[in-house]
Image 1 (tube, protein in one colour):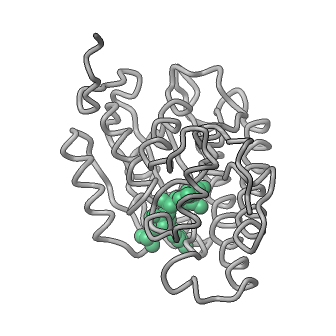
Image 2 (cartoon, helix red, strand yellow; image 1 turned 180 degrees about the horizontal axis):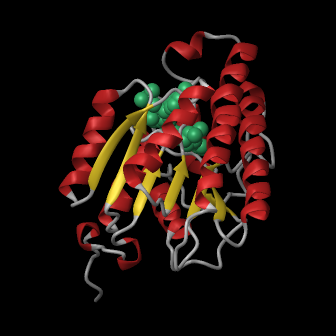
Length: 271
Ligand SMILES: NC(=O)c1ccc[n+]([C@@H]2O[C@H](COP(=O)([O-])OP(=O)(O)OC[C@H]3O[C@@H](n4cnc5c(N)ncnc54)[C@H](OP(=O)(O)O)[C@@H]3O)[C@@H](O)[C@H]2O)c1
């Protein structure tokens, strides 16, 4: 019988000695990405956050325990000057960057922003997830193309599995528009930067972060049943896909959208 895999022992040699940046790494999916990349041997990593310094420090501690040197940097991506300074600081502190993950995204479903009306939520999401992310990515892209590596560096964006097919209601209209815009930008960036830089999108389905942990019985059941795997996705599921697309060995992998949803259940009937 096969031995169970001990994740702590997984070391991906391809990441050894490399540098990475993960935006929005103070909680949820971003934290898991930073920890996963550390486990795979990334040497130095920027843990980006906006307000949650305690969360960012917790991520940094986990990375340090895995032998990776964390660098904490804060920036509000709604502020384009702050985004530009953040890109400058990353290059100043790391020098070369092999893997850049644009994960940060506004949370309008829990916390104070959930009180806003539809238009204000949409505007905030557009400012952070679309305009701020695109602006930051363009700053980084310019520098990435000037780097010389044996294998092309990688930039990854976070989309959403339902942005192409659509989902009913306010959340579908908001996140569908926002993540479709990010995906369209990323695919054009892949065309623009090839072959010097690889650009991909990882599109999660229902991942159990803060909103999912408090989801109603209806949404809990719906999230599970819409996946062929009959469960919520975890931040670690997304992190593994990010590691795959970022892996320098996967140098023939660019301009792709990888869904992480356990397979869409076409038999699910939504009532
Ligand atoms: N969870 C899902 O089911 C799901 C599905 C599809 C896509 N996604 C996407 O996956 C990404 C991560 O989601 P998550 O569930 O892990 O969310 P999360 O736990 O709320 O993490 C969001 C991260 O983004 C940062 N952030 C928020 N607003 C920001 C701003 N204005 N400027 C800079 N950083 C900001 C937060 O920083 P601070 O907390 O430090 O302020 C935090 O580190 C997001 O892009 C989200 O849209 C999630």
